[in-house]
Length: 559
Image (cartoon, rainbow, N blue to C red):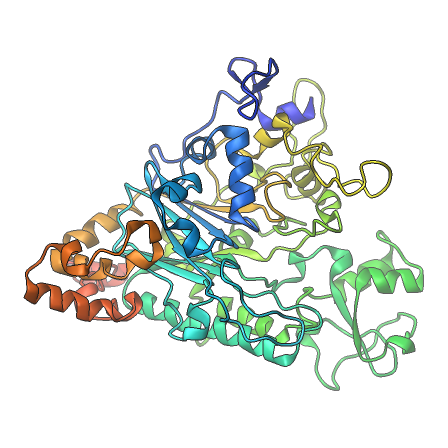
């Protein structure tokens, strides 16, 4: 009953199991789906699918097609996926592109591919293989796109790894990002490489922000930056040289940390340990004062092995007396009291089923866009909470840890893979076709938050950001000021992101005179991001003025 209430099921609309049309069994769908694309400005969904081929296959088995799935999801204007793991050779034929959802009615997709040998072997890592990593962005056709490129950082070693895809829409730009995972046994070079990638990414987003665009950065950064982004038991605490537990890692200094009244653990001196490890060793458990002290001293799980990257992230999102805040973590800002809301879970450890994850998937926007256009959805809209109702169910705040556990397990209906008995090793095969559970992933209404996609689809869930009226109107204004030749020049680099488009010459593609074609070919040799730094691509640079300036000069033109 709780599951049905949470999913909003009705018996008024049903369909056969798409995987087996001859089956007599009916699967009931919610009849009150809200199409987010109707009457609103824009919806962005970001999701690490951990391999698009198996995810897409399940989507088609369960809902008939990707088009139908996106319709149930609310027809997002922009869908960004990470870890697509598709090679460019797999999309050369139009039939293959259609079969993988790359060619989709109503949408245009752009694919950033990982090329073989682009990741230098190092301790704890392997050379990059073609078809690994990769990010993909689907743009609804009613959202105009000026340019798309994977040449974002300006460093070939990163740009060829398929870790970032930039789509420029005139008044705003979207960065679809998949940062590398640093394994526990990785050396300093791996951490330095990731930090360099993040720093180069920051330069580009700052560049486009300075050029007048609103900037949306989304994806899997493989990084936490707050203690709240990890389960309490998985936060880390530093054990000092004498085996004494010291303060929060964020404020830890070489000799300024003070021990607290916790038993000494000399065997763990000068190491980072999880709260649960320490609790088990000293005999304390959740709910005790000693446990709470450990939790309060703990910091995010990535601090112990990627401190430099965490410090970068914290600085990127910070504000101080000298500089105002420029970038906003949307989920953290919209739902500041939400507890235990994570986006990534270990499938091998069944960690989703006790909500033992981390929040490493983020949607980040510039501060001005957050204040003016991001819908600050009520935290009560987060899945998993319960409200008082006629059947006397107790109220449960959606920001509570229990609500987060309800959401991630579908009120206990999702269960972990068997570890013993005849079903051992079967994973989620027993539940992957449970449509009553799968259908709960679709939100009842538009909101900024998290979308709890089924565990069989990916070890990550999706994030969403809902933008208010007026956001896309700026795109129309910007495109109206851009000349046709500039639009064609910007389109020159898109073809590498759509292998099924073939290898037509640029002159044939644009149907221009030989002189015009020469100008196009010259521009296409540059990366899209390089071309967009030219003034001819930024006539909208002065589109947004401060409120004070507009009041002082009410007659000044916007462009």
